[in-house]
View 1: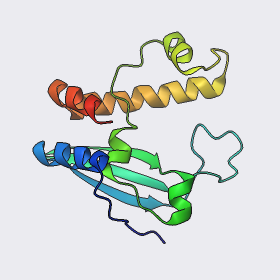
View 2 (view 1 turned 90 degrees about the vertical axis):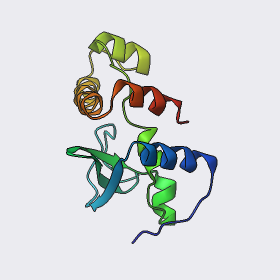
View 3 (view 1 turned 180 degrees about the horizontal axis):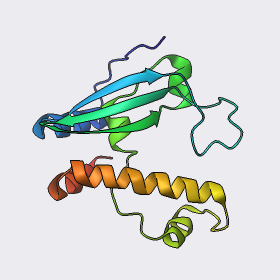
View 4 (view 1 turned 120 degrees about the horizontal axis):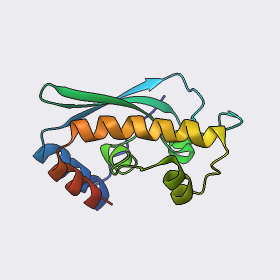
Length: 141
């Protein structure tokens, strides 16, 4: 189904070093593709769906992740870099702030569902990573 393509690029190296320094492991579990919250029509024009589990000592957290359609079509599996750069790293603030920052309509039910999902993810992220790790995580680009 998918393949890992070895890349020795600086972006992946940043993520690999971060993960190693903080003794964090990551596991990608392929799932039957469901519709991402941001896809209104669920036409399955999105990447493969994964359950991603981060572990550090006794702590862990899980998120859903869809890789890009491009990578899915080429059979490229996601890398830690892909997930680390896409997770919520800051408090999204109020619903109104969120909508303003990301171009959502405050009257949109989809925007509200997305906001609630981001708030939930932020809660997991801030419980898992230390403030210092969050600062370092923000530097991975």
